[in-house]
Image (cartoon, rainbow, N blue to C red; front, side, top):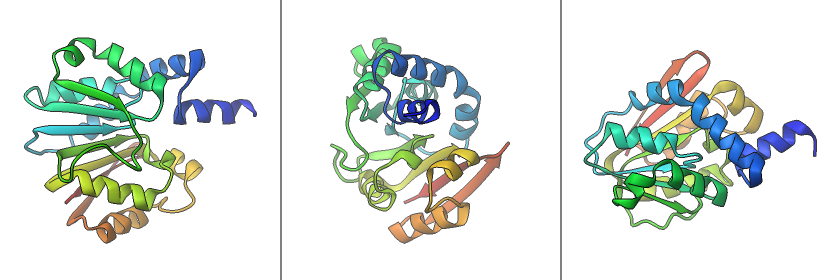
Length: 195
C-alpha cells in the first residue's frame, strides 16, 4: 500500500498510533470549516447525531451550540470512538454526550429519533450511499435537518457517483427529503436537507 492509500485508509477508519495522530490533526484542521457549516443548520434541537464523529471535535462544537440537547456520535472505528470519548469525557460522564461504535448502514436508533444529523467529511466513505442515506432518513424526525459537508476535491477523489451538487441533491429528494439547500465556500460544499 502506498503512502497516499495508507493515509486515506487512516482517514476512513483510523486505527493504531497513526490513526490517533490523524484524528488529532483532523480535530485541529476541521474547526473553521465545520463552524461555518454548523451555521447553515437552524433547527429546534433535542437530539443531534454526528455520523463519523472521528476525534470528537464536531460533537464538542454541537454540544456548545445546543447546550440543552443530547448529542450522539457514531463511528465504526474503535480508535475514533475512544478518542472522541476522551475529547468529551466530562459531557460523556454526565450523559449529555453519547458516543458509540456503529455503522451508518445500520444505526442502533429508533425511527425519527434525531432532529438534526451531521456528516462532516464522511459521506464519501459510506459503504452504500443510497442505502445509507435511506438509513439517515429513517432515524431523522419529520422537519429534521441532515447536513453534509466536504471539500469538492475529496468528493471528486472518492466518489464516482453522486459527486455533483445536482446528483446528490436529486438522491436526497428521491429518498424523500422535502427540500435541499446547497451552500458553498472556498471549494467546499455544505448540503442541508430537510425531511
